[in-house]
Figure (tube, rainbow, N blue to C red):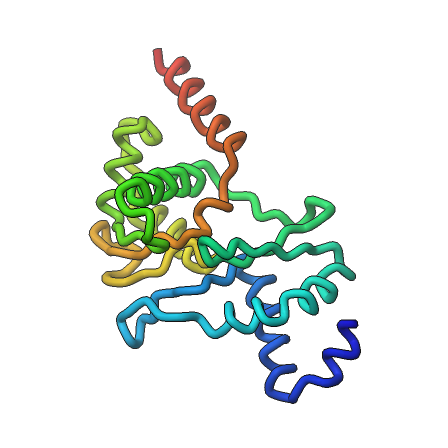
Length: 203
């Protein structure tokens, strides 16, 4: 079915197909709505519309190399997984801690407003959660280390920068609904196990 449908696509649609597949492979997530830095507003994402319309063809194409594609229509997230559990990106403890903080902030905001899909936040709020939850102890991470984590997360469509540079402790961003698919409960539990281990070593 894919090959026949692909042959019937216009050249423009073939180019868009390649663009969307490459975006999924590079960023893991495509969002229905995304912050546009040039227009300074959250707007509909044409890549999501194309992926949604052609999801069966994309699914078949990706299946040849062991990838699956999923869609959460409620949150507006399309994402991919590898059937063989390969090509997973390993993230360090600091990035994991920031991801946990982002998820915490996102879920708190969702409790207050069920209709929201993107949550406006900032580096100050993340640092507060890191400290309050005991995710960092004594010495705070350097601005350079934090900036590297934030840049990685934006590159994978987890956050979208709004104001300031990554290295600024007061920069702001949108937390995207893809945050709910980045870290599972097993990983969260392992983070807290690590915190407790560090705490016991310090006693």
